[in-house]
Length: 345
Image (cartoon, rainbow, N blue to C red; front, side, top):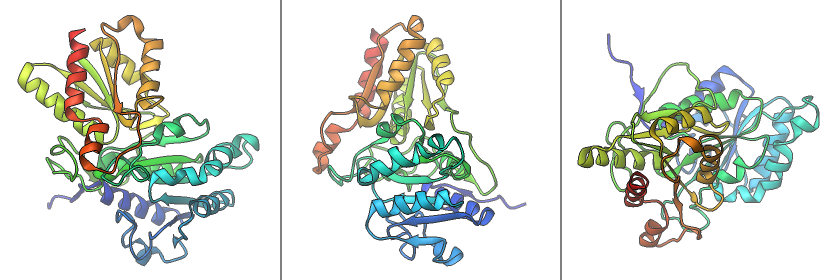
């Protein structure tokens, strides 16, 4: 029998997830800038307007408040909208609608109303400057009522998006710009330091991935590394280098979702290795790494043999100049040195 083709890019995996859910449930609709005939800025929705029509794949004005306001209204009347915000930076334009309305309506109505909305947004530095290159996941981790997904491979992208669409709560779904075209195995990513070490393809079949379940991308015994999005791939390359050059065994954990967070997998790993490095592309101050480090410090302090190390972007706006941007965001060398420092403590 011929081998069934698998989906080997995140863009294709997201598109297939949207297609399958729109075929399954007529209440699923898409909204966003240029998502129709153009297929979206990153081509995730390419071809869907031909299959499902303009009623279900709706081009919107360049107005984030219009996109999210319409999506919330549609969700309250029984639809399941997937709204695309072209750059996560511009979620600030509709912050009130997300954190004061979508996140709270179900609780404020005693469960009588629900807001099954998915907000897809692109994060990460990609030589686009201060207003198009931020990683803003931590803002929404801080808001009760929102779920937060951060897929790093095609397999997770498809499975998590399908689960998000079926959820009766609002979900923030963050996609890294430089991962849309990642291929397996060893595909080169534009703007990154090397090839992707591991990219799990997505099958053309029905499956979902539950929120709150981390994926151990690489097992190890000397140090635990928790990384998100593009940083997962950088961490895997560093882990491979450390194992080859120095015989150091690094365990790499991808949380997959930040809310809910799989604390159990992280804590069990730290109890095994005694050391933790957390890597995320958002600013180190008050970031994703801070929350994970705090959880481990509260719940597994007695198991730590060294201080926890965070690796994140410097506390400065993302610069436009590529050489300066490279200095600001976490590099493989910074990750390498952080792991070595924790091991030597």
